Image 1 (cartoon, rainbow, N blue to C red):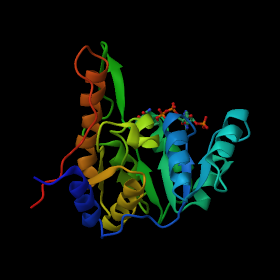
Image 2 (cartoon, rainbow, N blue to C red):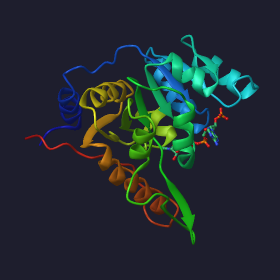
Image 3 (cartoon, rainbow, N blue to C red):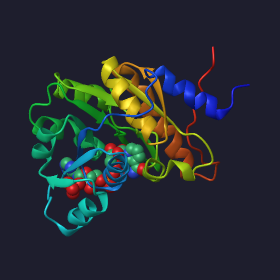
Image 4 (cartoon, helix red, strand yellow):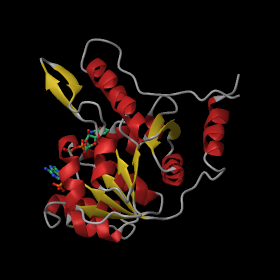
Length: 234
Ligand SMILES: NC(=O)c1ccc[n+]([C@@H]2O[C@H](COP(=O)([O-])OP(=O)(O)OC[C@H]3O[C@@H](n4cnc5c(N)ncnc54)[C@H](OP(=O)(O)O)[C@@H]3O)[C@@H](O)[C@H]2O)c1
């Protein structure tokens, strides 16, 4: 039986044998729970983070920039995206289409989509989009970008401190461009999480469904959990 450490190594090997990511300039669009957790975690790994905020001059954003370090800065959402080679949409799920269009030309950039399109219906979370996914919506709004679903099934606390969890945590990734998925996988490995390639942009629908499974259980009297998709050693 392979040990968890061996499985983590296998996962890293699947992504071109490179456990470390090169340093990127990353536009973190949104300064809420996910934006600040991923921003701090990615800066810790040597990336330069530019927060894209609707109000980059306010105290909360200044404090976040200082806490992030490694030459982090803040700008308007579109100015941040223009400076970056990777853009992360850490924004409310139902504004992704308008926000993506407002970011300007994203051609050639990797766009990471951690969003979960859901709404409350009679006390349960249900999907807020039909016959599509936010990843496909973003890809259609920015056809020249390489959109990758990632981080949507992981809590912001786990993004920041994966070592405090009981074991390895998986990050399913989906997108149409293999090279973009490879780059995102390397970022994920460097953060101490386990990337699992689950397919093309269309498959992001099922990744978004994973969060509905998680969140409706989390806010019930049933057992809460985190996702660990154990790779099979062939
Ligand atoms: N919370 C989690 O643990 C978690 C885990 C996985 C995935 N997600 C997903 O990640 C995304 C962000 O979640 P979050 O918990 O970080 O949300 P959040 O705390 O509400 O932060 C969202 C940020 O987006 C910006 N924003 C707010 N309204 C906006 C609008 N109308 N247009 C453009 N930008 C807007 C704000 O930053 P500025 O004020 O600086 O503009 C805000 O701080 C969501 O789609 C969620 O489904 C969340």
